[in-house]
Amino acid sequence: MRFSSKTTTLIMLAALIAVAPIFFPSSYYFRVGSLIFVNGLAVTGLVVLTGYAGQISLGHAGFVGVGAYACALAPVHLGLNPLLAAVVGAALSGAIAWLVGRPILRLKGYYLAVASLGLGALVSMVLANEAQLTGGPDGMAVPDPGLRALLKSAGLDLSNSAFWYAFSGVALVVGAWLALNLHHSPTGRALRALHGSEVAARTVGVDVARLKLQAFVISAVYASFSGSLLALQNKFITPDVAGYMHSIELVTMTVLGGAGSVLGAIGGAMILTTLPQVLTVFQEYEQVMLGLVMMLVMIFMRDGLLPSLARNIRGRGK
Amino acid sequence: MPELMQFLLSGITVGAVYALVALGFTIIYNASDVVNFAQGEFVMLGGMFTVFAFEAGLPLPLAALLAIIATAAIGVALNKLAIEPARGAPVVSLIIITIGASIFIRGLTQTAFDKQLHRFPAFSGDTPIAIAGATILPQSLWVITGALAIFVGLWLFFTRTLTGRAVLATANNRIAAQLVGINTKYVMTLSFALSAAIGALAGVLVTPITLTGYDIGIALALKGFAAAMLGGMGNPKGALVGGLLLGVIEAMTAGYLSSQYKDAAAFVIILAVLFAMPQGLFGRQSTDRV
Image 1 (tube, each protein chain N blue to C red):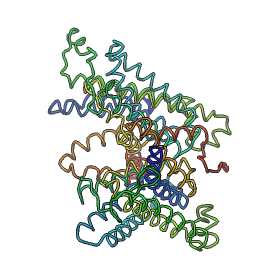
Image 2: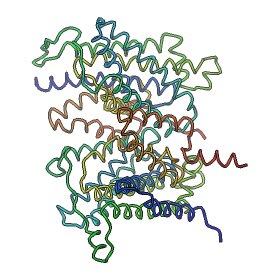
Image 3: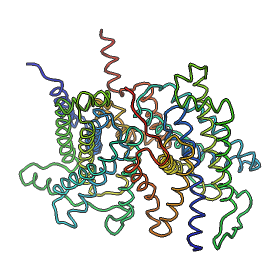
Image 4: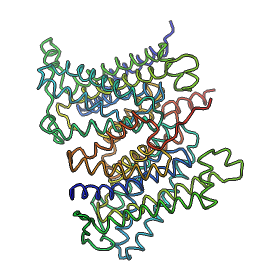
């Protein structure tokens, strides 16, 4: 029996997530792990948008913010369970992406970048300014969805950090599975054709506008779920999650690891999430390092870190 | 009415700065098809270098001159070290490179200088001048006059000098420009130097009013970008009009609607303009060649 690359990727990812805790000396590592998975989820969505369809968004943190605040607001104002609120947030993000995406996706390259940037900026501004609703810059608390208690009553007692590690790990594997399925579907092939050449794709009958919009909506939904997960595990949320810097970090993670591959991009999320933890010693130089990494990878390893390394290793093997 | 006049005056002052940032974007975009997200950092560097040279005891004009030269050198370095090696890279990569550069410059500034806000004295005092029931700071006049002078200077440069025409030719068609013997590499370097110098000058002019600090560049780059896009990317006249328009709209929003959402005005406008006129106010419809 031969495994397809899709199955191999998923098994590798799931095994890595399941085995890693053996080497965790403290619960702090579970915490960093679940942060990696949360970012990995948003980044997987950007793989669909940037890696498959070749479009750039500099405002995706806006959707992260919508997902995060849905989990904080809907339970208070609508009495929804926070998990259901996450679904509502994702639907809202998808709807916003669909509404705004229709006009802005006619734009190319820089225009799309700046329009999405504007969208993200608007979301974070509303979150920071509507203090009576969102708590303003101080943020607000997020209620517990009660899942851990449910598991406990079923006889499975996990520590808080271990629970969220497992929960977001599973979410990431499901997200990666969906994205990989898309990659191998006719839609995925059409998206990649679009990346290669928009004009050529249109010539062979691909509905370019509709496809770009689909990719934008899908990536917005991923970002929204990422925000919800972050809100639920932190139990607290501030407008920073929707900020420009978070958008930039997400894009950097995606291209750092390699926008063309889900596993590569998740690798990028892992590197950029752990880097600041390691760099706390050099906190002064954190921005300098981040900027340097962004420039060097894009100049010398255009396909991203992991694909470039993989090619080198394969090249040497021959 | 005096209220409206006041908003108009402060809007034009801020708008002139946006116009200068937008002009910087335009020059680099025309010569190299790169949108330089580090453009706001040039404004910040212009202000910061002047502050520290001035505090070190240099006379203000000399400090400003040094700041402009140093920033232009950084612009050239950015082109040589990061943009030129990445020639032919897709738009996504170029965006990341210039964003990386802006974060890098911000980080270095923060470690080399500090995280405080700074200012230096206004060029001709702080006594407000009364105009039609409103007041304006003498420094605002410096900003507005400076922006107009730069605009006229650039216009003369592009239409009357051989080098200026070489830049325009490169912007129009790089390969054709190379064929007629234009050194397009030199043109690119020149545009980065010019654009950085203009940014730095804007920083020097506006710092006595708005203060400078290591992180003021992001907001300026975004507003300048919005202004350039409003006017039509790549069009110097569009940059000027877009900048002034954006400044005035922002001042009106702050005055009549909500000061909290004055920054939102820029983005609402840009989204609206892109919806209705994807090429901006003065942009040309471009066609794909297959």
